Structures are given as C-alpha cells and as structure tokens.
Image 1 (cartoon, one colour):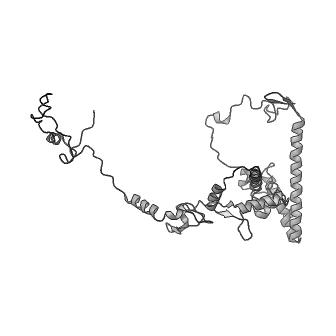
Image 2: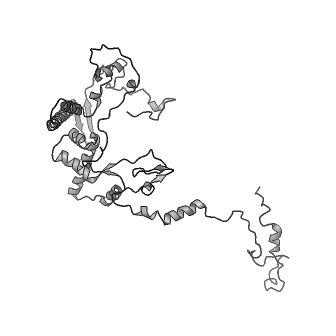
Image 3: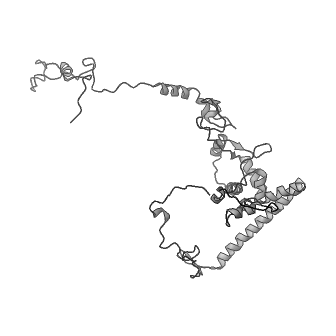
Length: 346
C-alpha cells in the first residue's frame, strides 16, 4: 500500500481547484468529445502553492560554509608546497587542542603518530659511493651513517638499478620523485644531525621477559652470556644477536686506551673480515647445493634431481629436511579456532 500524503502537503481538493471546465467554443470540442471537466493547463506554482515533495530546501551548514571558506583561503598555501619543508597541516597550526604540534606530525589530532625521515638523494649517493667506489664494508658504512644494514643494502641495489637504467637510456620519473621528496622530512646524514635510526637493536625473546633469581657466588663473574644461559639453553647472548657485534669490541678498545683512529681502523678491518667469511660461507653452501643437484634440460623445462636419504626423517617422522614432510598435514589456516592474525613481530 503506498504511503499516505501528510496533511501539510498539497491536498486533492486544492488540485481540483486548479482544474476548470473545458470551453464549449473550442475547435477541438466539436471534433472530439471531452468530459465535463478537463484541465486547461498543468497546475503551476501560481495556481497551487503546495507541492508533493516534503523535502526541505537544501541549506549550507555551518561546517560546510567554514570548509568552503578554508578551501578558498588558507588551503591555497598547501596547493604549492614550499621546497625543503613538509606539507602537513601542522606547518601552519602551532597548537591544536591546547597542545603544541611539530613539523613531523601529519595529523594535528594525533600527537602519537610522527612521520619518519627518509634518506635524501644526497645521502643515498653518499652510501652508494662509500661501498661501490671506496670499497668500505657494509657494517662500517652502517655504523658511520647510523643506517640499518638492510637499508644500506637496499639503497645500493636501487642505486645500481638507477645507474644502469641511465646508461641504457631508460626514462626515470625524476619529477615525481622530487615532488614526493620535497613534501617529506629528509635526512642528509651530515655531521650534527641526530642519528637516522638505531642500528644494533636486538630481538627480545619472550623467555627473557620473566624474572629469575639465580644464586651465584660473590667471586664469580656473571656475564651476559651466563644470563642468557639462565633463561634457556637456546637463548643467545646479546653479543651474538646484534647485527654489528664488532661495535662492542670497538668500545672495548677505546676503553682500554687505544686511540680513536686506530680503534676505527681495527673495526673496519674486523668488519671486512667478517663479511668475507660470511660471503665464503654462502658461496660454499650454494656450491654444495649445486654439486648435489643433477640438471636435465629439455625444450621447455629444466629438471633438477637431488639425492635424498629417506631414513633421515627425524624421531617423529616429519623432519624438515625429509621428503614429503608436509604431505598429509593440514595447513594451520584450516584448523578450527586457529588465530590467523599475527600476534607478535619477530
């Protein structure tokens, strides 16, 4: 059943008032019979001041009016960002809700979120030159510029691709890159700046979050390695978990009275030696895998065969290196009640 029209709207009686009897002297009335009452014209607003629609006339609210005034006024300052400065709202809002804002705060109402700095093009070129031109080890560059080793490796890889594209004549989106870099806080890695990021953070194992009471004698030297062993046999000490353990020896050499220049030279030499040992280990592992692999090339595919010991399945029969250790075991996402959202980051 259709909804009824409210009393405040146009009534049927008012509609009938808009209709008038048809004139008998019209030329069309002699040809076509017409009813006693026929509309001479459509009802207009002059004859019927009410309409069927009950929707109120659109009105501009106070918030919309304020937003329009802001767009036509102060918002023009953000259309063209200033070179070398961020384009955040806090650039022109020193205080918000009685709290001071900073240039690294994109959202004035969220003081807990700060925009992290990015490496400028000059800083990336410095990192690439230190490794590819000067031949410095990765750990030494990371320690000198206070940039994580993974980021240093990523910068070198990206710069190599960029320079290769330049040699090959491929187009590079420099205008887009400069426009984005001009609106973000940057770090030039020059002397006097605060460190870019921590480089020796270690993962805190959940076993080490508990409180233990270990009785030891007063004459015994209790080191960090002993503390790690107290939490568990598989817990590594911090010296073995940090990415640049050579920095610990650097500080020890300084504390022992070694000159700063000699201590840094020793650190660079130790870092280069550790990197060479790691590279040799990776090369030996790849060579071992290649020697035990038989490759058979066909027209479309390359078949690889390896010798596998079928008896090396472990005590439970599902060793990780055994053949078919995954067969017959359902995935974790198919178990009922399994939490599929990561609860921690390792």
